[in-house]
Amino acid sequence: MGDSSPNRPNYLKFLDRHDPAGRIAAMLRLLDGCRVCPRNCGVNRLKDERGFCRTGRLALVASHCVHHGEEPAISGSRGSGTIFFGNCNLRCLFCQNRQISQGNDTGEEQGPWQIADMMLELQRKGAHNINFVSPTHVAPQMAEAIVVAAGRGLRIPIVYNSNGYESVEMLRLLRGFVDIYMPDMKYGDDESAELCSFAPGYVHSAQAALVEMRRAVGHLRLDGMGVARNGLLVRHLVLPNDMAGSRDVLRFIRRVIGRETSISLMSQYFPSHKAAGHQLLGRPVRAGEYAGVLDEMDRLGLDGWIQELQSSAYYRPDFEGDHPFEG
Ligand code: SF4
Image (cartoon, rainbow, N blue to C red):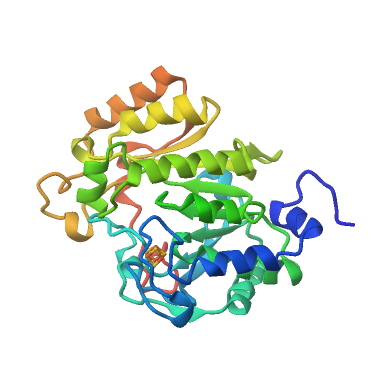
């Protein structure tokens, strides 16, 4: 019998009750004729064929470290154990992680045992949680690593920190493996999503993903120290010229996901990568634009973490150094 403590992570409770082999096998089948994300590329990643995300059978890990710059509920006092996957299923013109996300194969292919080693190392270093960054295109590989790490003594919650362009079929298979979902809701209209991230049908996919995530883990719950134990935290990055459709995003969350939803509203946008010089994306967010979004959040009665406008000055990770957030 496993520990029945309410603070016991979901994946341990799940593994107490189930043999994960069937679920993992079903996830791996999604890699054969890949439909792990809404792009449905159809390539056989079990044979190392590559689709839009340019990732084969094994996950690429670009970096792992204890990170103190996430939301207070995720970083807490001891930091979050981040594992950054390489490559991505989006191509955002303004990507701040462009060194590792744009299909340039930064990092090394790692199997489940090697990823589990990283997870256990981060736990030993005192991290509050394991924070998988950009896991969508390697969700089956992530689940394999969770099973191995749990068997070897992992005891801290799992955070799924994603861009929101998800397959509901994949998310349903992940039920029980994740404690905290921290997806972006990047856009409120598909035209912007296509233009800025080459993501057809983003809005429907992200909306359906949020519904499934809330169903799987509920609203965010914190421990006595204010650190997340489980639940949903939705991130939204405000873009210049309202390219993110911020009001529509907030209204959807209020209407469908619920007023209790924890939101992280971010102002840290800066025109990096291909956004520099872009007609619509080539400048930071103005104070008046950000204030308008804050007003709407207030009007809707939504709550969460609000970045100060000058945040764009200090969020610039560098994945060529040993620690992406120190420079
Ligand atoms: S995970 Fe990659 S290969 Fe699979 S459907 Fe998405 S982009 Fe295509």
